[in-house]
Length: 83
Ligand SMILES: [Zn+2]
Image 1 (spheres, rainbow, N blue to C red):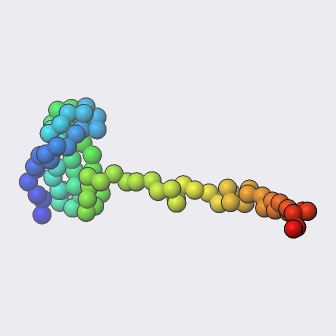
Image 2: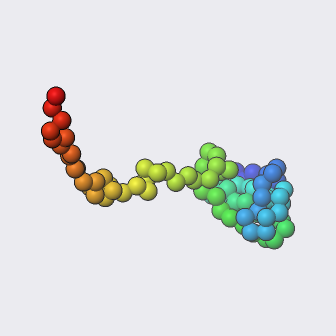
Image 3: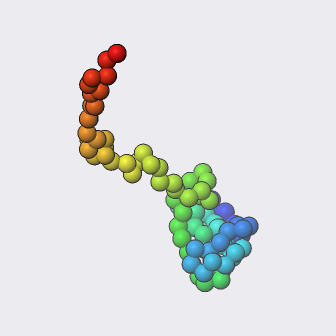
């Protein structure tokens, strides 16, 4: 069931950077669509629990294992240090 369009308080338009111009509604298909009344920007938002939270890039995902293999195992022997 479509929900009535409502403005999102504090939302900033990604295109024109106007605040409080974004309104959001849900389509019949259940997609959330946000629209900017200032510049006409519209964006379909996939179903998310928290649409305001940007997706974070984690270091784990970006890290490559090649760094680990480039570490050379160099062992320094302390020769002649006997008492
Ligand atoms: Zn806008």
